[in-house]
Every structure is written in C-alpha cells, then in structure tokens.
Length: 286
Image (cartoon, rainbow, N blue to C red; front, side):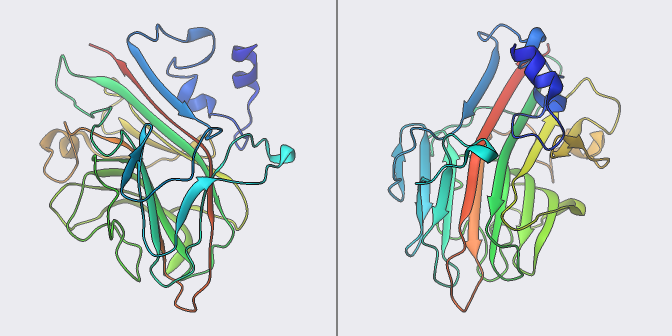
C-alpha cells in the first residue's frame, strides 16, 4: 500500500514527492535497509511550544521579539493536516523565528563528491504563508550548518541570508519580492549569496507549496544537485566544478534541516508561516 500511494501521488499532492523519495529508494517497494539509509520525517504532531535559544527534543529554535514556534491549534482534514508547525506572534518589524534539527549542535548530512564519501542527500518540506505581499514575511528553507538559528539569521528589512555567511543550500524568499522563490547556496564566512535561479517558483497566499532538493553524486555531469517545487524537478543546477572546489559551495560540511523567517512589515502586523512536515534522508553509494 505504501508503494501504491506514493506512485499515485500527484505533483501537488500533500505527501512526500515520489520524484524525490520513491525514485531514490527512501520509500515504496525499493525502500532500503534503515540501518544504512538514514531517513528523518516529522509532521509535528508532538511539537511543544518552543522556548527560544533552547534545545528541546531534536530541535533548537530562536524566536525574537514576540515570535512563537509551536503546534498549530487548528487542523483541516481537506488539506491533509495532522500536526502543523506554526510560526506566529511576529507582529513587530523585523521579528524573526527559526528552527533547526540537531538541537543546535550537530549536522546529519554532508554533500561530498570524494570517492568513498559519496552519498545521495535529499530534503523537502511543505510550507505556506498567509500572505505573500511584498515586505511581509520572508523565509529560507533548506539544509544549513548547525547553530544557524540565532539573532539575525536573516538580515533585517530584506530577509536576505545572514550577512556573516553560513553554509546553506535551498530556497529563499525576500521581503522585496515576497512571492518569488529563489534557489540559492551560500558558504560559511562569505557574505555572497549564490543564486542558482531567480524566481524559480511562485508562492501563493494561504496555499501549500512543497520545496525539495536531491544531491546525487552518480547523476550526469553538472546536474548532481536537483531542485524540486511541488514534486517537479527544476532545470537549473550547480556545476560539478563548483561543488568540487568547495570555495563558494558548502562541500564536505555538516548540514541539517533549517527554517528561517523574518517579518519585514514595518506597519507592523503578524504574518504567520505554517510547515506541515519536513524530511531529510541520506543513502551512501560508495
């Protein structure tokens, strides 16, 4: 039944995207031995009200001003929700909230093209915001270095990545172009944000969107890092040379799931974000 469900999942279905998780053997009939196929999934059914700058269970969060991270009080069967993470209370200008897996201490995956160290790495989340109006809530989702969640993980007024630079690969929206979803990567201690594609996707207010990535070291040249929106692969990637050099791309760095938000509304007003679930997986191929 698991295999049938995932094979039938549509591109914008509420579940994990088959093109990511079934195609690479994490789920379905090809699912691999969990002792060497690492897989993490959380639908936030047991999420507590998170205390800022504190490790709770597998997570570490930072909430500035009056922002909160907790389980959403309501559920909607028509949208397939069970547990939902809610970021709210962010009703002051530049209020922020962020969450990472690994309790702020450790990473779980590394992107490394070195023979003997290679692995498929995949991640995805289902997210929505109540508004995508410019200068409202900006966010970034992907994998990042441990201890990412801190004051000004995203820059005030713009929602850009932290000015000091941290390891990150994934998706970003900015305050000035709130509905546009860009694909990016950054490396620690370098302020440059490397954009894979500007406006790779369009967010819609109060509508779920799935954002995912796969790094496959066995894939064709210059197409080893793949981005997906609503289960559909995008055409843009990062070259093998950039990944191998590791001077602009976070090659061979410990990484973990991160979600970062910044409210750029100076009015001000609360602009919640919801995450239905997120997932991370790794399969060694050497």
